[in-house]
Image 1 (cartoon, one colour):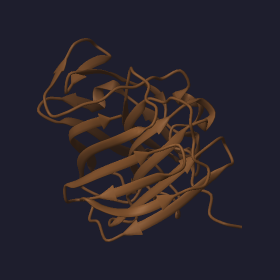
Image 2: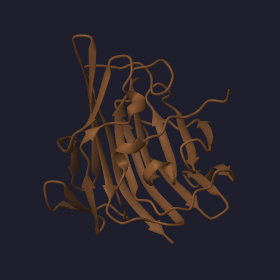
Image 3: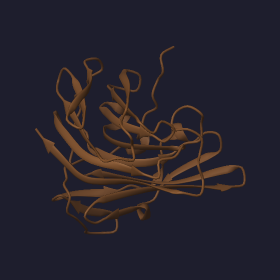
Length: 234
C-alpha cells in the first residue's frame, strides 16, 4: 500500500473562501484582518481529525494568531492527564481562487516533533486540495500533495530545506498540472489528480501525537509560523 497523506483541513474547512496577501497587515475585527490588502479570517474549532489520535485533542484558537508586519501562527501542546491538548491556529482568505500562481514566504521557529505547518488550498471534501506542508518530526522536509476528491491524490516529499530558515514557496496550479517551487527552484511536478474547483487559501499549524505523520507530541514549547508575504497571480 502506498503512503496516503492525511487531509490537512478535513471537513472542518467546508464553506471557507479565499484571497491574497503581502507584508503589511492590520486587525479589522475579532475574526477578520487585512493582510496585504486582502481580507482574511481566523478559524476556530477542531483541528484536522487525522491528528486527533493517541490522546491528542487538536483545536484552532483565534487568540493564537497575531497580525502585524508579519502574519504569525502559533501552536502549543500541553499534557492533561492522558490527553495532549494541541492549541493551534488557522486562517483563510475570504475569496476563492482558480488556476494561478500562489507565493508565500515563511519560516518555523522552535521546530519540534508533534506539528504540521501548512500553506494550502482547500475546497469542501477535497474537491480541490493543494498542500505544501512541513512536519515537526522531519525538520528539513516539505510535503507536496494535490487532491481531487477524498481518495484521488498525488504526493511527493522533498528534503533539504531547514524549516527554521526563511523559504520562498510557490505553487503553480494549472488545468493539467501542479508545480511546487522552493527558493525559486522547481522541486515537484504533478500531473495526476489535478483539481479544478475554486478554493480559498489557508495557513495553519496543528498538533499531532503519532510516530509517523507530524511525530509524537512535544510539550512545554510554543512553535511559531512566521508568514511575511502572500501573492496570487492568475
